[in-house]
Amino acid sequence: MNAVVVSALAAAVVALGWSSPSRADTPPALASMPPSDVVSTLDRNGNGCVDLEEGRNYASRRFHALDRNHDGSLDAEEAPPGPGEGADSRPVTIQAWQDAYHARFDAFDTDRNGCLSQQEIEAGRNAGKGGQ
Image (cartoon, rainbow, N blue to C red; front, side, top):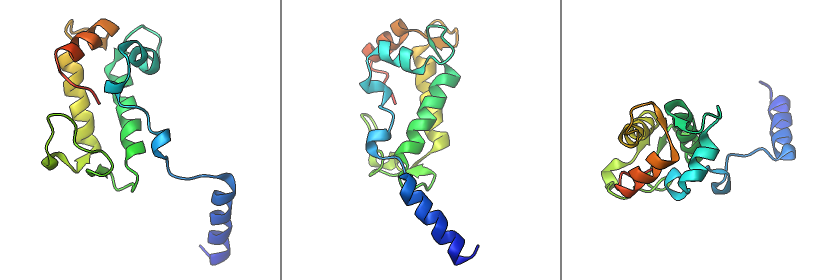
């Protein structure tokens, strides 16, 4: 690519205001949302609960928004270790992030129907099973 094309692309990016997501653009941690908001925010197919795919998609969007340097992992500055995590829990890859979400999903899904209801989310939180 020649220098003129690169300069034109750079000018277009600046003019259109494109940039990497800011902290304000990062989807909130699920643990910070009331259970009813978790369901209403993540339930894309309208069945009244959050299935594994809906939750993994949300967790993935959150991961990518937090990964400010776009290196495919979250360091302690981008995502400080949460309760029960030590400094050795960072950096974390997208696969590890999704695996952690999947483990929490399984712990919350007490009726094993593959979909989290508001009541299961509340019960899981009350049992201290965490959230991402």
